[in-house]
Image 1 (cartoon, rainbow, N blue to C red):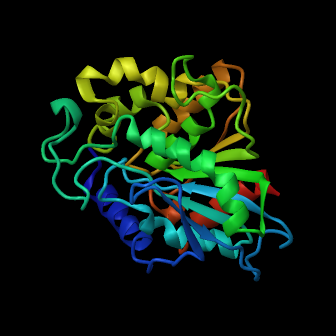
Image 2 (cartoon, helix red, strand yellow):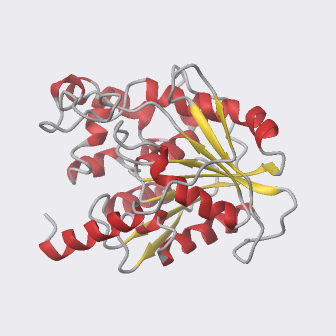
Image 3 (cartoon, helix red, strand yellow):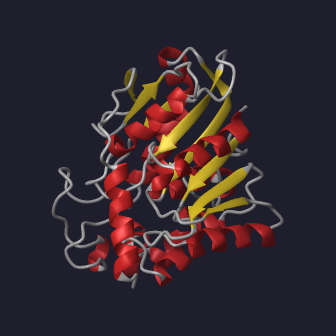
Length: 307
């Protein structure tokens, strides 16, 4: 358990990150019929923060976090999306179906009765994964219509926390078991992945009780966790052959650095070098907080892969 000082610091970081007003997108497009099957688009905005020349801006695809639970939607990362647009990136902020009541309240404590008390269940199996795949498959056509400034050949996939898991997973679809409905025959055409405090290793996350055992719930609890891990856990889908960087705060008590380190170690054992940027005196939320120095580090890591 974190001490009182660590918990207070984490709460202050979360309050700062979530204090920014939402940033409206320049366009929104649907990739399915469900209200959550939408993508918000942000055009690159030239200015002093721009990371490179404005012609043909790289595309950053954002998958938000929130433990795959309905109470957290894409709105909390719209300031982060706007920040990236001001750095000269074209941005696609993806929504997807999550677990729990539609209004983000209530829930039965987890799929299969294996949750954590009154905590809403995390994710929907297989809907959450279906949506990420559908969004990314639809993205090239949607980007051409909504963001003509974007160069989709220079796409970087990023995600925070549970969204970091989804980013790593989506980049590894070509390594899924042969009977997985989401499997593809070749690696995704990405410049790279930048995963921010990702839930990257489900076994490591469960040992630490990350997000009230959200990974356990996502896969169906006792009835599904072991059988579904090969289809859902990024640490079992290596090496990807795609440039990957993890950005992690050393004082993160939400998704501790041991989870990212476990993924990086597994990648090394599989013969792949995964970058791991550890930030001193940084917790979970500064990575997506435009007011925090850590957010500028994230933008630079994305730029290193994109430009």
